[in-house]
Image (tube, rainbow, N blue to C red; front, top):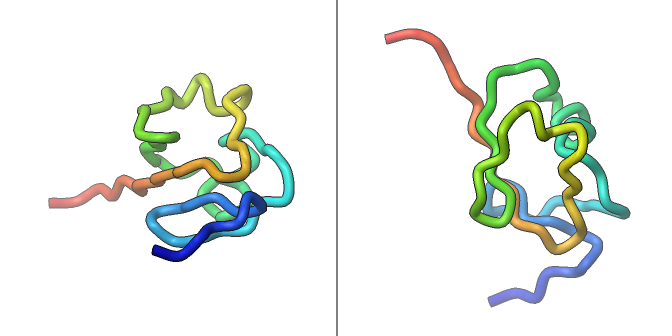
Length: 72
């Protein structure tokens, strides 16, 4: 297993650069998902949208972001 630097996070299973802690809101903006319906899991814990602005993503964290799509 490859060693992941502490200047990255694991985002949806892949290394993603992160120079310093950011809020989930900032991470969503940086990935183009701000304002879109998503479900976020941080270190295997679901995060409520109301908590995005003050929940910090630290280097080394594991983040899963699932975009929700309408349709059937």
